Image 1 (cartoon, rainbow over the protein chains, first blue to last red):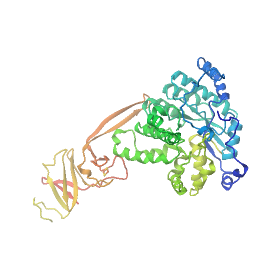
Image 2 (image 1 turned 30 degrees about the vertical axis):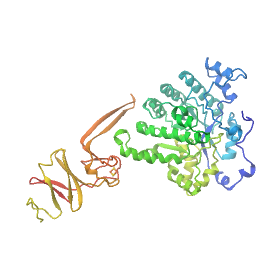
Image 3 (image 1 turned 90 degrees about the vertical axis):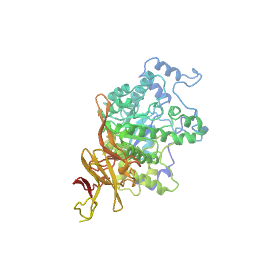
Image 4 (image 1 turned 30 degrees about the horizontal axis):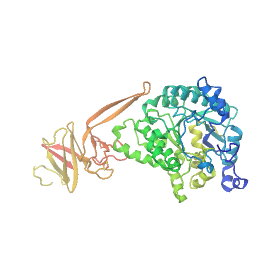
Length: 386
Length: 132
Ligand code: FES
């Protein structure tokens, strides 16, 4: 277990003062992918207030040192994610909204409005009832611990794919919370791809409540189910992590078009996190497939790219790294103010600094630059930045 | 006026491509006129002609299958989707990449910018005459 007292998301004073930082002083920034440390003891203790037995009792014992001989509460995989400590999975523990989010993100990354998700990663919890109960409890902790009393904070209420009708009810419940601004789904370990019509109650509930649906790519438990060769036959976490987010987002995006989901629910905005943007070349391939085989996807009334530019958004994080930075500029310019949204992924090892993104926006008009830094998020998540 | 085997009074740019009784409902001919291949279709008794040259990548569009296509309707209350086979006999699919065209208008079903160029065609004195 890494030293939980370290705060490695913080940088030196010299690093903090630089010309790019100066440029960001006057611009509001929305960070649409901020995580909490869900398995931290403080957060787990919060969950207890919102759980009944047997799950309450399970967590109580999970938290009691020396009780259980192995960690069975939450599914995990078995990779050496942190290279035995060289590359900490979490740069710090995020349990306190002010100290661990607001202070750090505003000072280091110029963020004014964090959009927080609990990242409970419950897709692979076997029992439906348990996954639904833990997820609902997580959403309550999100509101109580992270949003209440922090007016510049917003949150994504998560749902699990096990029981779409229950997920729709959860969306109806949380939509009344002022600071809940979207629905959060992990794209990994969903068993059935997320565009399948069995999930339509989730999209309808999102549309009814005027909330976007956010798909979070992750090398999360469940990858073994979606992509068994990736999980079992590749040798390293380097390979696993390179493909996990992209594969799960490939599958999700393709599935949404296969099933005509954006045409069925034209009021829903679809947002993708944590796979960078180079993978968006898939959209051009989907264009081609759509034109060749339109009669298989007759709900679609226009090309996938047209839907994307109207109804889809993509986090820039983690910034892709072509050896020639000019190519990265070209990539952001291809999608630009239409679809990109800034995100940090705080506090994980994929973290992006706003200044690092800003370097590539040199050719953007001020208007388009601002859309990426906050405008698109402000519109989709209905955040007033004035 | 040009000379033609049928002794019809035609202008130089007018060409006979078939006898009308050969090009019956549902049939097509592809004619080579001044070095250009032209596909002529009889759909429900109406004649339509287009260049045999797909606007996508130049494939032999007019040799593609003429059939129908699928349309869908989604019911938001029941969350069900109903599929319907429709426009039988009117949809021309390019054999190279399957792009669908409405053979009665030249409209491309997958790309608004790619309408086919309609070529004038008519029945005259028992012959099908194309004007290039
Ligand atoms: S050439 Fe006709 S569809 Fe491609």
